[in-house]
Length: 280
Image (cartoon, rainbow, N blue to C red; front, top):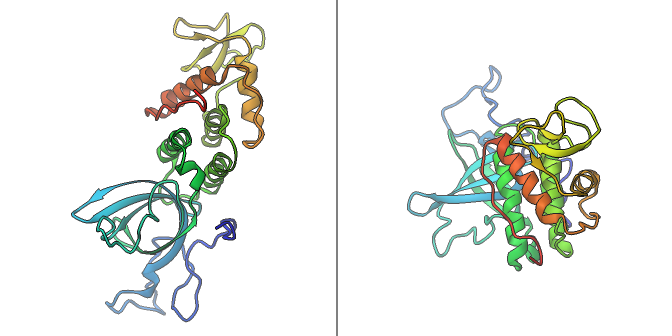
């Protein structure tokens, strides 16, 4: 399945005999040189791809499918008849699936007319611990992704994390590292070196969600939390590590994950899935 390429994707379908042309989503195809005729325009059909984040029932047999596209951010699409026993889509629109799509642009929801699987991350699906970790990743991505905005870096981060989770043993620090990298990507990364309030670097042993990270003893407030020895250094190394080569956690993985998740919940004003640590 990995023969497919997801980098340098065209935003939309490429022109040819099909009559499809590349254009940003939502651009009006009617011009003085190509006036609208009242018939459905072939340019309403476009290609895209992405990772399925979630879905929910819509009507009697349809399903709304939320997808992260590298080109267009969060897509809200509808799969007609997908809940029927003999649906032509099968299980290709389940969460944790990277898919290639043909979409018909609608007023509120784009309709999926064709779908094929690029990557299904099978080893994630076969393990409950990995499913929990992946579900937590999808939950936070769903919270930060925006519609009609390019999301290449967010897509690449999620795809890389799912591939690492699929290809090797689940590292206890993977979800925490993912959280930290996502926080940096959206501009809410916690301060992990110097005091978030005064910039000092002496006696920074407490963590304040409101202040934005570690704080020194002079800036600490009653709601700041005391950090376990070594936790700050562990989080700082995680934030700068490749997802495929994370450091030993020294028994700090649980505290690190809980702290960073609560930090994201505070700043994004959302509650996220709590995932069990691998081997926990």
